[in-house]
Image (cartoon, rainbow over all chains, first blue to last red; front, side, top):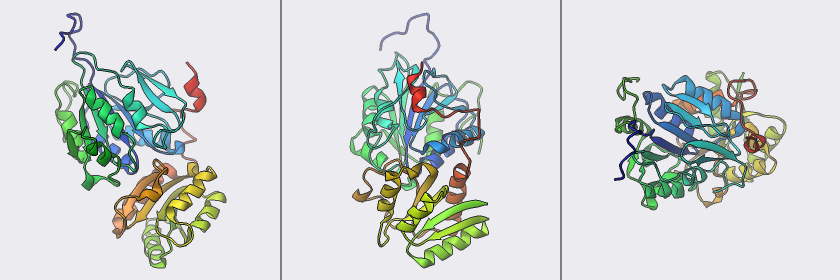
Length: 210
Length: 144
């Protein structure tokens, strides 16, 4: 392992990439409602029509201990913050630090595509933890992205078949052999909360909000 | 009044689902086929659409393709009601257009939970009122 520079003693902010489609809004809402304030930053790509972008972001924010905001071009990732990609633009990470919104053709028939966001993730800085989560959805968007994250050393989770509205995207990722765990939304929240360095010191333990 | 549209060729589904949702205060549009669903959305229906897949005439997937061809998918939230556990190949290219998926047979309270959840996002005028989270547009992507 490469030692961190001595001037950088604080753990690097963990980064969570989450993709979802059909049925994903309810799963995301459940996961976020169970998470305590995190040291991590979460970037979410949920396929949805544009007219619900704001109302979905507001509904998540109303029941989350972490801030939730729609991504604006140039946003800088921040801890305890969920960045929700808006419809009709691809959302890419720049240097694992900033978010860019980029016009483009649909990928896997969708824009934004989970694959585009996940495949824009760069090799993590020494000590930085990456997590990829792929939830319920039709088709295969996100599977290649999860494989990319796995190749960078990420921990990867797919929503389990029993809790999926449609077990399409997660099944494709499992088929690619890039998934560490298959879990339901409650278990995903508990698992994330239990990862070393993911929770802000002093915040409550998993499962105490519900 | 909260609106919901049910598209199904089975009158017993239209009646049973309609009754459950009306009891919860929804105005229910019962539509027996895909063609009339298209007409209703062209005429300005906005909100949740519960859509069967296997229907004579236009199937559920064909109806969604027709809505997409006219750009009408941007005013509705589509939830599929279906006996199939997963979509078949005839849904290819429609990824991202289906908000949720409820397998048949479904319990009344499952249907109500889904429709009430979806309706909070799809009520007329929603998404155009808040100034706290302006939605990004393609032009936003080219700025800065």
